[in-house]
Length: 419
Image (tube, rainbow, N blue to C red; front, side, top):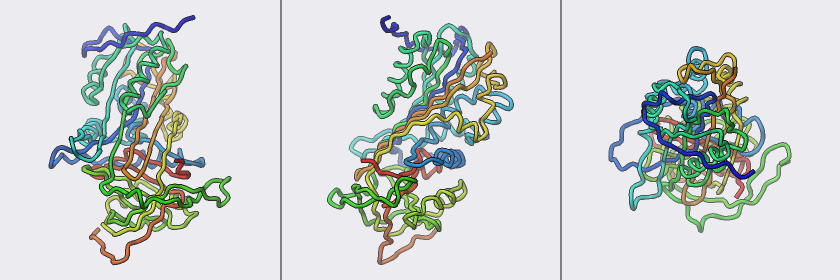
C-alpha cells in the first residue's frame, strides 16, 4: 500500500459546534526565552517550584543525565485540565501546581520577550496549538477558552490518516523548536480513534551576560557517577571565568546564578562541595530550599569552572504522574473530562516528553516537548579580595529559571557532559 494521502490542516473559528472527538491528545512541545524590548516590563506573577522539584525527584531515581522542561509539561497539562471536572480536576491541579490558570498563562506571556535587533542573542518563544478531528462536536466554550487564554492556534485534521497527521504535528513542533525536537509523537501513537491533540512548544536560545573566553577553555577531568563509574573520570572541555555571580551557600552545595544577557533569566548551578556529594544535594533539594536559594542570591566574586555539555532526553511520564497523585485522569472509567465534551468519556492514555540542551562559552540553547494523549473508553552584596573557587568538575544539578517569577523553565542533572 502507498502512503496515506496528507490530511488537510484547516483553521477553525470559535464557533465549532460541528466538531467532536472521541480520543484527545494533549501535546506540549518546547519553550524558549527572549530579550525584553521594554525598559520596565511587567513583573510576572510568582509561581511555586513544587512541580519542578517533585518531578525531578521522580525522574532522577535512575542514573545518568536528567533534563526536562517543567513549564512545558505544566502548560500542556494546564490546557488539558481546563476540560477536567470534579476529582479529576482536583488531582491535576494538585500535581501541576500552577494555581490560577489565568495568572499562569499571563505569566507565560509576560516572560516572553521578542528578540531585539543588534542585541545579544536572547529568544524565548512559547507557542500553542489545538489539533482536532474534523466533523466531531466538542464543547466550543472549552476550545474558545484554550485559544484565548493560551493563545492557541486551532487546526483540524483527519486522524484516520494517522501517519500523515503525526507528520504534520511533528513538523509544527520541529518548526517551533528550531528543529531541536523531532519525532515527538512516535509511530502508532496517533490512531483512527484519536480526536484531539494540544501542542505547546518552547524554544530557548540565549547568550551569557558575561561570556566565557574560548582561550580559557581547557581539557580537564570530570568525575563520573553511577554504579559503573567506580570513581572514574573523563576528559571534557572545561570553561573557566572569574567574575561576579549571584551566590548562595546551601550547606551541601554551592548555588551560582549565571545571568543571560538582556533578560530576567539565569542558569542556576547547584554544585556539590564534595566530589561524591550529589546524593546529599538531591536529598536536600525541596521547593522551599530552591526558593530560599533564589531569594538569597548575593553578588560574589567567583572563580568558576564548568564543562561544556549537551543533553538530549526523552521520557514517558504517565506512570510518573500517577505516582505524583494524578491517577484519575488516566482511568478510562472514572476520568471526568466533561468540560471538553459530553459525547464520550475521555481519559489520558500517555504522556511523553522530549528535551534538548546545549551549553558552551557563548550561552545556552534549549528546547523541550510534552505530549499528553487522551482516549475514549467505553541578602547584602559580599566583597572579597580573593574569589571563591567553584569547580563543576563533578555531577551537578542546574535549572534555567526566570528570576522575576521563579518559574523553572528547564531543569536537569549533568552526570556526563557528553560533548
